[in-house]
Length: 265
Image 1 (cartoon, rainbow, N blue to C red):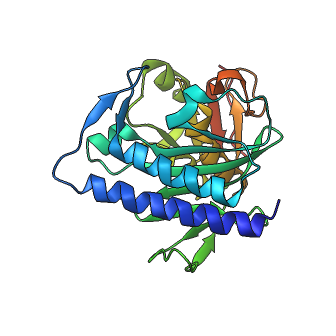
Image 2 (tube, helix red, strand yellow; image 1 turned 90 degrees about the horizontal axis):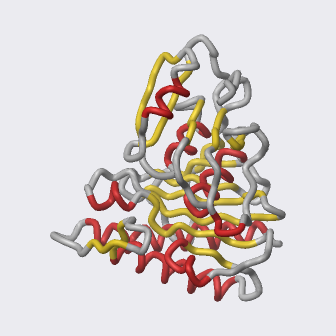
């Protein structure tokens, strides 16, 4: 795979999808419907999905593609594929809280190796370069020309004073009980895949997720974190979180900077 060409395309598609999402986000009103699993979906989810799906099909006609909005039609038995969440954090979008992202990842042999996470309302863009290193790009986010990029890396955590990030919309007692196993100096909440990015930049050391997620929710953030030196493991046995699972459902997991003294469940 030509990773140089791939990342140019993924970055552009994420920006194009982000523009469409913000067009709808800034409108006076937009419709919100419930999907079969009762999760919300908006015109922004569907429009972003259409942009990214068409772009991937045109640029990579032989590659398998999994997207959240078309997941019920997927029956893949592959370990190498694109996986897309066109609008992660729909609840944040609906409540106009800004913590939503566009996510595109390339999974190779069950591992997300390249990815883009774009938070259009936050003006933050994270992506893995062709060499696998993650950068954060600063605006103005021209579609054709890459702007100023800063390589990012995870923190050197202090286990006596950890920085923890957790879900804004899905926080529960089990998560709090697990976090209480650590010595925490600062605790913050964030929506969508931004939590992976905060660990990747060193703004947090640890992100535990004890709740339902799907592979498209995590793959791009996982790739971004890996490219910054971080890890994502299963909550139960601390083995690497793998992709291409039947049904695309994830187990509970922990995203963290190396050096964190992981606690058992």
